[in-house]
Image (cartoon, rainbow, N blue to C red; front, side, top):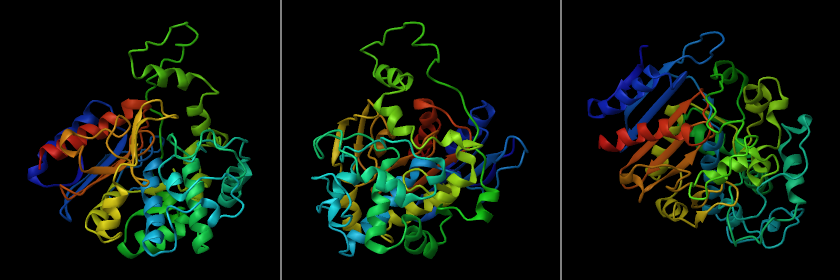
Length: 390
């Protein structure tokens, strides 16, 4: 298979890894982009955007990047805070009077400490595009733990919470603020709420390999307490686990085509609904690192770890600043980037990363989904080759 795009000779290792993933059958279609000190040094793509039709992956092929959206949504809220429109230490109900939970601050929401990681009532399919209505469902809930005392990944609720705060302050959706303040002025190929012409050329996601044996529970195999993935495996098989409750509502599979359905792409859920090209997402981090979106002092404070350690939802260690992931088991980063990298992963394997010390903006997008850590290894190998090339 021919890989398209450009790769600076200094980064030949990146091209080798990218091509090897296709040769080994790990990819269907994918793209990888790197900006170094503002200059595009890697911009690669290859494979097919749609397995059914054989449509090729091209230079401007976007794809649903799932939770990579969280960093972009957080940036929109931080812009408002930078302008004095939001106080991160203030209670959420200061901006959203109907929000019932006491003691939840805006910072708690950004750092996954609010105790509201799951929507308790099933979200009707007809409500999937009504973001304020979904937010209202969460607003009536009681936190599962005392806000600020622990953290647990708010996989879906994060976006409705942050997005509703943005809407209450500006009168606009998170997607509209991203378009007007971040993506639009810079010509970035990323959307929270994808327009029809972009949906038409968006890559179609395909299922990858299962990494947790479906028959594990039925076989009566006890979890190995020394295996850090044991709790994850057990939780994945438990329909009522907090992890599955956090990830499984709204039930996207009720729509024909699941996450490929135009309803999901149009809705632009702020936690996991961003459609982007690798080039567009990498350029977002390029501009963040350059101080062109947030002030340098704002970003430096935002990437400072606020919570690190056991995650009540993911059952692994995670680390978060104000909306940005920091290196941990849940955000695998090469050793050279552990101190300075930040960003966010996306379900199935996508990742966006910025690095203040090394001047990097990096993104990996793909359409062959993989579960668990198997999805992260493709991105990690590409990131490792990137850091090794510096």
